[in-house]
Length: 260
Image (cartoon, rainbow, N blue to C red):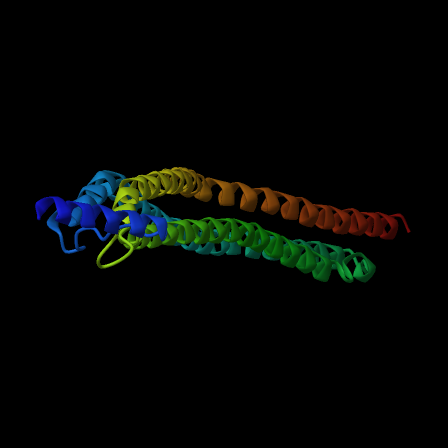
C-alpha cells in the first residue's frame, strides 16, 4: 500500500509540473515566512534610520534658511532707510544753503536748482529699488533651496513608508506555491538592494542641501550688507555729483553778478 501511495504521489507531482503549476507550499501564516520579512526589514533598519535623521535634519535646515532669509532681508531694507533719507536731506540742505548765500549777493540761481532736488529723489528711489532687488534675489535663492530640501525630505519619508509594502509584495499569495517560495529570497534581495541604493542617493542629496543651507545662512547677512553698501555708495556718488553741479552753477552765477 505504501508503494502504491508513493507512486500516486509521484504521478500527481508529475502531472502538476506538466500543467505548468507548482505544488502548494506552506501557508503565509507560517512563522518562518514571517521571519523572512522581519529579517529583511531589520537589514534596512540602520539605512532607513540614517535616512530619517537626514530628512529631519534637512527640514530643520530648510526652516533655518527661511527664517534667516526673512530676518536679514528685513534688517537690510530697514537699515538702508536712514542713509537714503540722509541723502535726501543732504541735497535739500545744499540747495537751501547755496540759494540763501546767493540771495545775499542778489543773485538769481533758479536755473541752477530747478529740477535738481527731484533728480536727487529719483536717484534715492532707484537706489532703494536696487537694494530691494538684492534682497529679493537672496530671498528667492533661499526659498528655492528650502523648497528643494523639503521636496527631497518628503521623498525620503515616502520611501520609508513604501519599503515595508514592497517587501510584503515578495509574498504573493496566502498559500504560496513552492515556486513562489523559492523566489522570495531573490525578490527580497532585489528590493533591499533597490531601497538601499535609493536611500543612499537621497541621503547624499539631503546632506549636500544641508551643507549648502549652512553656507547660505552663514553668508546671507554679509552678502546682503555688501550689496546694500555697494548700492548706497553708487547712489551717494550720484547725489554728490548733483550737489557739485548745483554749487558750481551757483558759484558761476555769483561770479558773473559780482563782475557786473
